[in-house]
Length: 215
Image 1 (cartoon, one colour):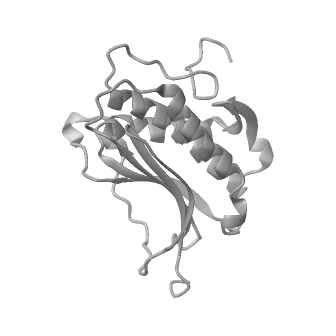
Image 2 (tube, helix red, strand yellow):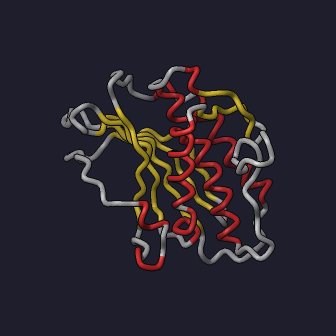
């Protein structure tokens, strides 16, 4: 891609600051990963034509990149807006939620994360990326675990905070508004996909579906 364009996870890594804290390093790597993983989820569900995506390589894995500028920008801006909150350990989960025409969730891909706020050592980036790469590989073959969605469904990215950042002190917090999405009344069915637990970062990826009683 031309050098005049902003660097993306598909064309290069985010710029790292020399004086960055371990939490900042982990958050930067994680945000890059989430952008790619969320795009992979949307591609996996087939709600857009396959031509809406193009193949790229990330962490030495073949992944999909959205061709449409608005789709690409929505995913990029959403996860990038979470960067300061992820670094501070405020974000508990990031979800890709698919809804029916009644605005009721039909399926959720959940990324549950924990950035260790007491970790003070140098982050071994290659080790962290090796672990995250396995999520992308597992995600690419997880379609049999998922639900067949109607063609008229919609989706959005949702974040669940342990505590909300102060809007007055964070411009990024202004991007996130309370949701009025209808919630399931019964505990969901959970299908694990992949998990990792290291000193700087813990991450789980799993599916949530409504219980039979809910359906």
